[in-house]
Image (spheres, helix red, strand yellow):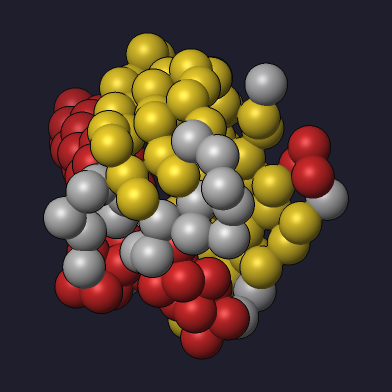
Length: 141
């Protein structure tokens, strides 16, 4: 019984570390000096067979090439700052619920105006047996 508990604690700690690293990669891909390498690092957290859902907007992405293209296009944005902080993490067996806060000032490449915002988001991150994200649900404010 003690061994099972220790294994469960190690798995939980590993998923907390993995989730924290994912949020850091999420932030790193949207910095003033972000590169395609930052995008690739972010995408490395996803399984080949994944689903990324933006619940509020009804957007679902399931193709890594399409996902990467959109992220690389965003590298054209003029980013003044983009900060992401973890407000809370709740763990399950193979899932993390993460509440984050985002502060950003960005001039999207396709717009003439600067957008500055502070927003919250809750992500549910479901991991496969390899520790890769198989289903990400983003619940925007």
